[in-house]
Image 1 (cartoon, rainbow over the protein chains, first blue to last red):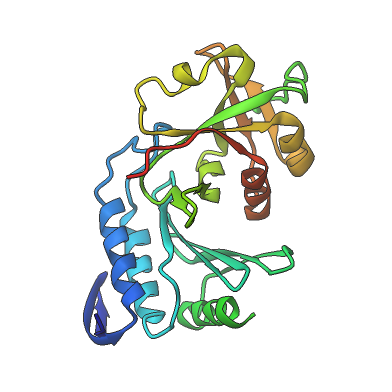
Image 2 (cartoon, one colour; image 1 turned 45 degrees about the vertical axis):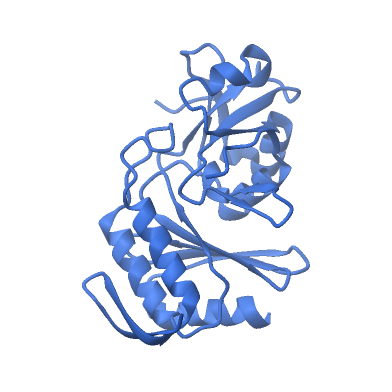
Amino acid sequence: MLVEQTAVTAGFLILRGHAAPWVIDAAKKLEAIGKLPSGWDSYGGAPLDLNARTLTVNALGWLGNENLPVPAVVLGSGGTVQLEWRAGGRELEIELEKDGIEFLKVHANKEMEEGQAKTDLPRQLQDLSWWLLHG
Amino acid sequence: MVRQDDASISDKVFLLRRIPPWADRVTWDDGGNPLASTMNFDDPKQEMSVCIEHETTPDEVLDGHPDFGLLRFSTQVARGLCGTAIRICRDPPPPSHVLICGKLTRSMRKKLRDSATWVKFPTRL
């Protein structure tokens, strides 16, 4: 199913037309982890943080036109969200926190590169997705 | 109070960590093999809870969590990967309960995850 992303407003992802199908699958996963209660991980894990949820929805919107695989949408024990992809022998982890992102790039030769960003997140995420797909 | 590394927990000791079957904490490859997310090795309080393998049983660690998986990894690898960034200390009860204290970087978490092996797969939901 092809849909077109028209807007990301106040944490809601509105889809119509041309957004990549993986966005819908990822949004469903986000909805599912949003239903988990406190203690869901058996170690006192917090439920999904609303700011992390909003940032994840925004990230899906910013990346909605990229031809990415469906990511793992992983709930952190602090209520954050980590998106995880594998493609072309590369791995990309992006944790979406209250005020920015942290990421881990694992190159095809297994070298690792960590970083973070608090500004210009749409461009940062697009750069990371480009790296995942093209190296 | 800053916790101190417990040198009596030797490098020969293996540690057990429960892995939830939901929240994409585990993904499955085409061969049906589970891969744990590196987020399983993150604790917001920087006190990751584990149990000493030879002082407990898998059933005891998983009591009340029947769908969870169980990973094992060695203190030698944890100390080797993380160095002085972590301190491994006892935190009973239960007697086998141990905390890995300190901030693990993302690459440390990944290496720790890669070193770990499954004692029990989680239920595939």
